[in-house]
Length: 417
Image 1 (tube, rainbow, N blue to C red):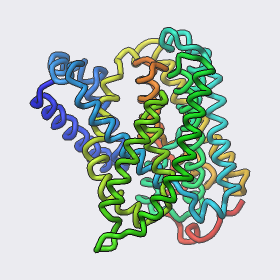
Image 2 (cartoon, rainbow, N blue to C red):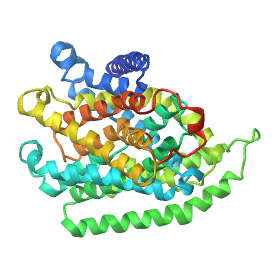
Image 3 (cartoon, rainbow, N blue to C red):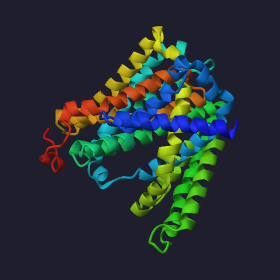
């Protein structure tokens, strides 16, 4: 692949992503929805149909290796920051029971529904050689995901972060994502080993050893390094270099264990000391390059994995089924959990609507499923549309439930049962 082709691909992808993000942001949607839509537009389902010759020249299969490598680096950096931001906040500790109820039910209901529709989807949509249970468990994990970053952005834009349902939703999303990633790691490990359950045991032992080293060895070491500050009071360059090396080594180890590099990046971020100064410094250094430049490449590669076949005939019916089941499962599960915890119906439905936002996290999950061969392009396209649809409907559903701005009393007190 020539450097000229790579640079041209970067220009087209970044320009399309920024334009779509700008347009969607001005109609009340998170910019990530526009960037995901840009990836779909650049794929064979849209650009490939409208401009087949141009698409074939610009995104020839043999020219995508450079894009794929850059996108993987962006994904590793993004998941590292997500893991770093995952923490038990004061609000979560104070409302652990409520967050647990919402988290468990907003996982359990879509998980059960995902398992329930799998017998209808497996015969026609599973790749050859993929057994029913790995396929069904992947569908369960895919429908269980909640996009914590998108949810946080929606709440912040609406000034609802400190409302009771906003705090509850953020705490519950942390519970949901931990469970869903554990389930996904199990499914990927099951598919990634050729030794059956013996291979799965080896992978499990490897992960346990790695976690032990991370949390009992590296966490205290980085806590000590945090005390070594640069002259301006920020984390030292020695610490930053050690973090990047540790991140890459952990991502490499999870790849070696037949898991995806994103699991290692997420775990490494989660194991670091909870330090607001470190989080701010890393976010300022990493997010501009990972979010603005590298993640749109991931969206584009995801779009290139789609197919127009998903929008016709019986496949369209399957797509509508997936979108419907995903929406009902998340909203019903989240709302039921909040209602059981004593929240009003209005706040409970708002919580369920927030839990339904899947966004980028869903896209990461289904791209992993496509890469390891758990799903094919047709089902991948359906799940991508589901991720777009459920994320796009979150804002309007929130407005329907609680309006666009919180009432003053709602930011200070628990809603009445």
